[in-house]
Image (cartoon, rainbow, N blue to C red; front, side, top):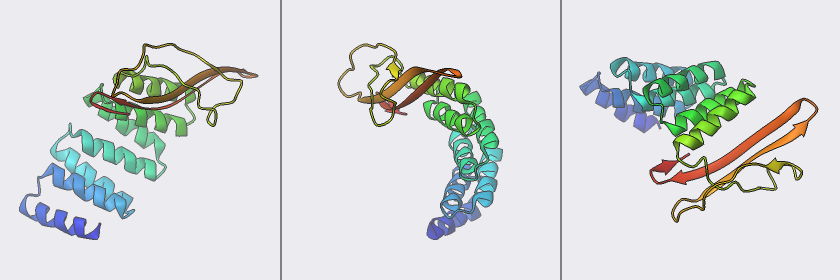
Length: 178
């Protein structure tokens, strides 16, 4: 990653207003665990192009690496302000909310990620190693089409504190996946 950093510095010497080069610098710094410097590089990329989704997303990942989940959440909210149909941003917002112990909001963000990816109505499958055996799975869906594999589990269970919901999944849609 040191070599990538040096190459990026050479590119920035030629064009200091290259948002992509600043984003790549941030990625190299992040890989070197130089997180604060990575954030500065992403900020420079964003200063050049305020709608640069990749730089915003990478900044959010770096906040996650630093366990700065409130800033991670704000960053992915910014991504979603730019692109409401960014399934990965919805998923990452859910991860931040989960770390902040905002579980209901996290589930809503994960549900939104699945909806945006176009797989929210697919069949739900029990994955016994992930869910308690007495958890009732909910939901029905159409038959999957070839080329669109989905692994998902979502359930509801009664508990002393009320209903508990859980969801987990990986999906690949026609244009990528979550």
